[in-house]
Length: 589
Image 1 (tube, one colour):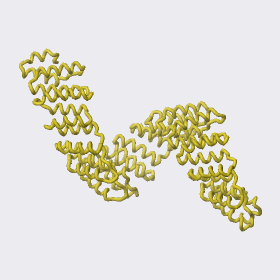
Image 2 (image 1 turned 90 degrees about the vertical axis):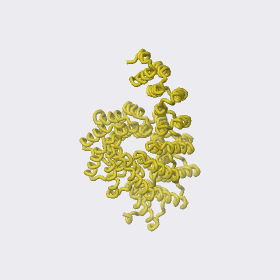
Image 3 (image 1 turned 135 degrees about the vertical axis):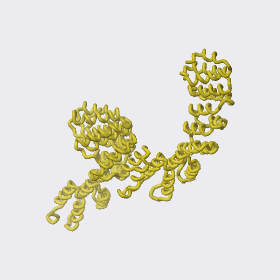
Image 4 (image 1 turned 90 degrees about the horizontal axis):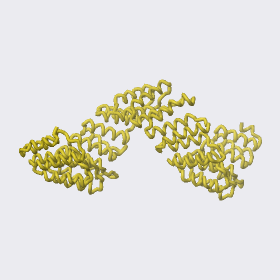
């Protein structure tokens, strides 16, 4: 072919033909042959060669040609730059595209909307929505009118930057102008809603598309379903799915069904996820690994580990290989059900499938050991991982190990793990770490150690919560009520904590129980029937029948429904004082 070319015009035509078929190597070979033939390349020749590189996203070769063009004495024109910018856009090189646009301005070449569109699109791919916003302003400053392509690029940039408000603003501006928004515009706005919790706006936009008489595509409904999935709106997702064939004559694809399954999974509707998955099979749509991951995730949420394992068997039957997400989710599903042995088997078979466990896989396995009471295995795996180099251990992994020791009441091991976590580089113990350590001490009756851990948390500035308070009170109430009362000033006060201390006071400390009841009111906690029952029991043990009756009346004044235990405690107090009849006159059942 090269030998038959007899003029520069024929070469230009041949290079242009290569561009249309994305044969950039052939185009560059033709360009190199020009010297051998004694032909002088023109601006058109360069532009055609740059275009061939642009179509193949070969931005480096395009930039080299543009640079050579400037060195030949020929004048690069707007087409040269626009085409080079397009090559950068296709390759995701938004910074280079922006530089080329600035070069255009410096050379005082007449800017066109094509160059701007390419730069804005490049910025969109680079998730640089701020640059897109400034470039749209530059379009107006250059006295150019933005086209639907311009706005689509800006909206796409907004979507990638999670700026749904901007995307909606530009859609409104476009619809109010001379140009009509196309389905690509609406799809881009729907993409902006996806992941932003704007599922209702996505549903409304489907109505606008219908009102504008635009032909929605499968992509339109896929993105709308995905938006519903992200917000857990499985009803809306399934409504869209069912309406695609009935009302819009569109066939759903694997992405559509996977998004619908994911919507059910996000909402915890594991049974509906399975129904949707079965419907997909009935429609003869081949699920991919993402589909299986979505439905396995639904089963994991419900701790339906046996169904999840069955899905893995189905996946293997399709000759598809599960990924690390598949196995991590399966391990988590087994762990939630206490099926640690099955989780461990899956973990150990990862090398067979040429999969490397990641931090999520490790944490799921640690959690499975903890829930299965296998604290020794949890510590062994943690130690092995700390010595490994493939991936590290995060605070979640340490917390799982501490919780495993807590379940087994191994307080010494739990405190040692907490110490190791505090000394670890780039890791910081959180409230979950301290709560698990305190609970392990509480279960072993080590109230002093529990207090020590609590004060450590305070010194490190960790914000404690209700779980902390309840565990501390449970640790102190067995004879160490004074320490428990002191904690109310430092920890989060809860019903469970206060009621626990009330129960611990006993008859000899009835006055302390009364003070604690007042403390609850001062802490803006309204005493409940459990609080009054514990306090009345204290006065009953102390033989203080008048105080018992006052507390009973106070409970009734707050419109609490007293039960037989409360009445019996008051009756017992009166009986001990030989005043049983007085008590029975108080509406005792």
